[in-house]
Image (cartoon, rainbow, N blue to C red):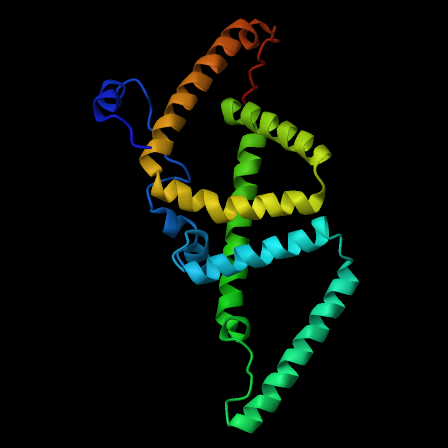
Length: 222
């Protein structure tokens, strides 16, 4: 939904602009800039739709149909073997090329790229977690605590597979929607950040500043 330009200009000086993910770079570059970013941003629509359909089918089989994992795995293997068998016979009869392993699976560089991207994002997440947990940014500290508590409440309602499915849906949709509606998202996020900053300053002045603190001992110089 587009934002009224006159309304945006009136509030430009009062509403801070929030740049998610360190928005000095494009979203595609922040997500790795490779095939993983193309999938998350739906630049490779066929692969993105295939992954979404496959994960949805797996969730449906386990949660709705209540398939057992071993049974499902065996049925998939049996079906695959029958398809390959029929395909091989028809290939010999009609002179077609025999079935081969898909390039996406056999390509070693694609797997290395996925693992490298995951490793890099995990290190960045751990560094940010240690920075926030160390009390360097009190506003983010309380925000993370609140978010973790909300996630724990949600986790007590849904099972682990449902959470994984919801997480995958968020990965497949949120980056794409953010890249498409970047200005609108950052504008409204700026307003929310401004309100949260006011609430924290009020909490700091009314509660945190009234907590008695002991005298700070000066270090003796040797």
